[in-house]
Image 1 (spheres, each protein chain N blue to C red):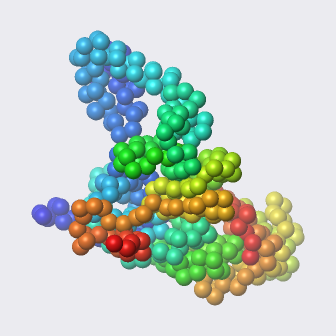
Image 2 (image 1 turned 30 degrees about the vertical axis):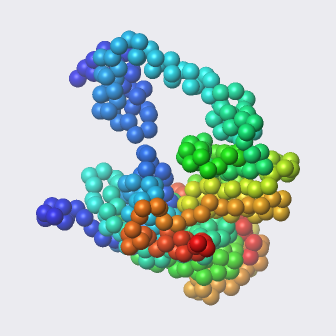
Image 3 (image 1 turned 45 degrees about the vertical axis):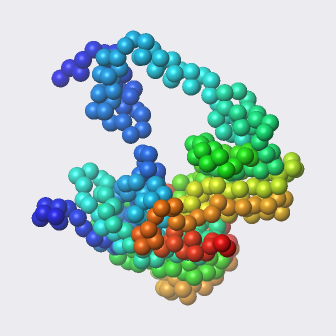
Length: 198
Length: 251
């Protein structure tokens, strides 16, 4: 059965390579692009090319950056003595949304996972260590995910830099607004262990 | 719930071997179940802070699960209760590395085997219990990890021949090990083999015969040889290459 003109088939095939996009969704998106204004389609194509051409990694913290350094590392109002360590660039965004943190970041590029063969050498842990050894860092906040791999990564980093600076870990516990009776024992146990004075 | 829905939902006990992030908030789980062997499942929305699964669907958790059978390879997790969370294991880098090695072995060696293997399941649970009891103890040493692999190979039907030459059946002077032959070999049959000490032989025999909790330590060279022997046997006969934790193969 014919799948339509060759350019449409090509667009469908390209879109179906995207994560979470199956063949039928790709086809629906391709038809939507075909029906849309030429200016909208061109704008989408240019945005894709631009993001590949202009966005790289910051040479200091490995967050996403348009130039050699990201906007956070370039911002003179940030507290340079604080480093928040995250797994991926996408993790910076929710922390920035809190407006509670005014320090710098360090993006590891993943988490230690022995079962997947991801070792310390595969992450930017050596670069973090160099930043800490460079001096002037008063606190490193470990904000890796509260998963098995995230905890293993946090524990490994803490062991490496504990001698040079204060190392803290994001608190773990109950989500605000949740019912206690629905909490799982792991989360509740962590909440109990990390209880604070009021 | 109608009859059709009932038949597509089933309960099972499982250890989470590995997880992979999927989509915006989902996670794919590689499970080893007591009743069905290796299964894949998807846990929808599990990465959201208010997920009803909470922190249970993480590697090394032993769980009572309710799964909804799908037409594809992945079932859907509809309920999860913790049987064992192994919290001490999870708080130790050594414990996590040993548990990951054990789960990785089960994942690779029993992949594609959709039949239950209760001895393998019980072995994995027992090993995780021992690691949790003492994350810096004997179970997480090279000797403990090699003993686990040997017992797993036995449970999977790939135990090396240790009682006599794997090629000619001779019972004296076993001086080498051949992965291709699948066991110890005599001097006449030692082509393609590597030297295998009496200590390594004793270590493997004791590791097979004793419970994990009563494991005797072996010397470093013997444990390394035993690790190599199991690795080469599995490569030749199960077509599985397990990572060689050489740095940890100290007794």
